[in-house]
Length: 398
Image: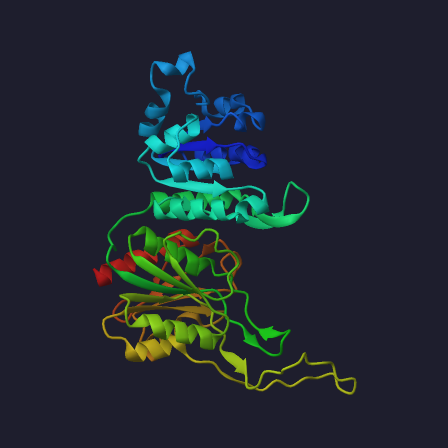
């Protein structure tokens, strides 16, 4: 059970903090709430008091709270502080060390890890002052989940929407599981699919979301490692630990070059990306039009660079983990990959199984190594799979 304080500030998304609170309670956590005065205009303190069975801290000067120095007591009690939604005003106060209300004073006083979830108008988010303040928070080791792009309360599209409650909760769980066993180690992770252009409009790709690779990168960072993520086509980087260095790529050739550039300096590589196996021999300069005289189109393809095999041939001290996403003959194909690619571990999964394929939040994998029998893990969240993979890597590189 974790002692979590949710700091609610005055944004239209304040009502969503109620759902987040309930999620922590279902997880068995003890939750308390602090609110700015403006937040109470969107959601009443009585709502949170009814759910937590605890008073809500809204005022530094209330006689009922004064005798106990309530904000210091709450700051000392807290094991994780979440600011949701975090307005531009509160973000600025945190960055500048200002303590002029119940929320900002409690946040300044606590030594607990902090998670800030900005939600605001897109122009306020893009403002240089806000971006400077976000950079300062990250420099102060505050975890930040960037806002999402979508329809805003103002009636137009923009970046400023609060991320999904599940995203916030999962990030919080990852923070709570942090340790320092991999401090001083460097880990390189690849994630997402690659795209091979057919013409300026079309490409060959796959259904990979990048969730598994992102989860592994987060788990490595939370274990104290210095992490670089080489990201192809991923659905969402909002949950990525702010300490992770990101290199964006599009094609398999791009990813191969990026991996080659970083590989010599790392202790471990996790190739979780779904790399395209083939690419067009030639890319059309213009959009390919339908031929009225034929119902068929022939594409000539060639193999893409085999990144895992390349690093397997040049590795020295590096520990290399590969993935095998299969639809049949899982163990046979994965074991073949383990030997031919000179990997240390192959993480095999059958992506045709319901609920554990591309884009799913869960996974069911089998671990193959050279000197042990395959180990089948039960179905679990990708975050937990990632943590267990990092445990395996830690056993080898420490």
